[in-house]
Amino acid sequence: MIPSSTIRRSRASSSMDPQSVKNFDTLYKDHADLMYRFAHRLCGEPEAAKDLVQETFLNAYRGFDKFRGDAQISTWLYTIASRACLRMRRRRKGAPERELSLEEFIPTSDGEFRLQIPIDGLSPEAALHNKQLRAALDTAINQLPKKYKMVLVLRDMEGLSAKAVGSIMGLNERAVKSRLHRARLFVRRHLSARGLGEALIDHNHDSRGERRN
Amino acid sequence: MAQRSASKRKRHASTTRQPHTHGKSRCLRILRQLSAYIDDELSTNICHEIRRHLGACPNCETFVTSLRQTVSLCRHSPAPTLSTADRALMREKILKTKTASSR
Image 1 (cartoon, rainbow over the protein chains, first blue to last red):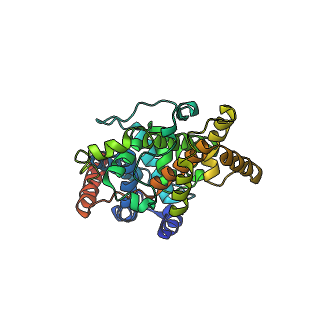
Image 2 (image 1 turned 135 degrees about the vertical axis):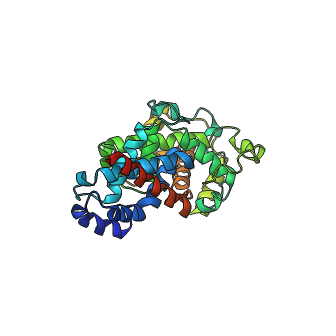
Image 3 (image 1 turned 90 degrees about the vertical axis):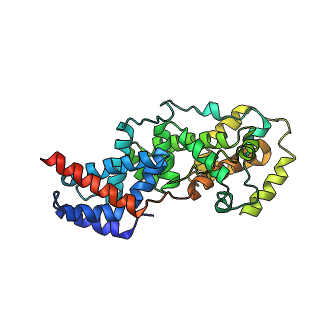
């Protein structure tokens, strides 16, 4: 997941000149794509993601001297981006911050135990070729309260360990796993909602172009 | 894997309407641990207990299948990509802002 160059770079970073454009360019070249992917997944749309990437690298540029080199540079950048994301007030606001309780995820009817999306017999890659399914998944993730969304994105989409996610978000592993579980249940519930299967077919035209970058 | 899941789903489709023969509190206790279960983080004893429950509770087994599918979709969701032009434009903006703030 994390390129090996990151590890080598983290060892060399302590000698970086904080004011060096050349060093900034190396950092940016190696990590801009990674940070954009993360930012896009957090923000759910490209313009907000670009703002977040710029904020992240600007803060990283300003804070080179604070980076002690005892962590991977990618982890350091994820931390800066996560904090910037929580600070940034977006024009398109996400779901309000609220706590998710396990009780709210208990299905109340037979139909809600299974997913209501076309996935039977398909690999996840094949299922995700369906634009409507991708849109339904994106919608579910984007409706997550931010602190849950961040854990889901870092753990299940960026592929980081629970320990790394805890380090980035300032949480212990138990809290990371608790939030991750609730976030997964939230997305699962959205994808198992009655009528979603029909909606995926009925609104075929509405969801086109939702994943443009 | 996909075929096995599909066959499981077919098997459960005919059983999901069976009434519960145990208290829902047991299902809730299982539900609390399902992420740890599918991430293989639980002890052998607890895994065995969960598997035994899933074997006896078609609703919970359908539920865990749907949670596995959800996690799998998240893990395989296509990565958004940054265009070369946008990458260059953002670099310029960052350097410009940094220069302006250093004055």
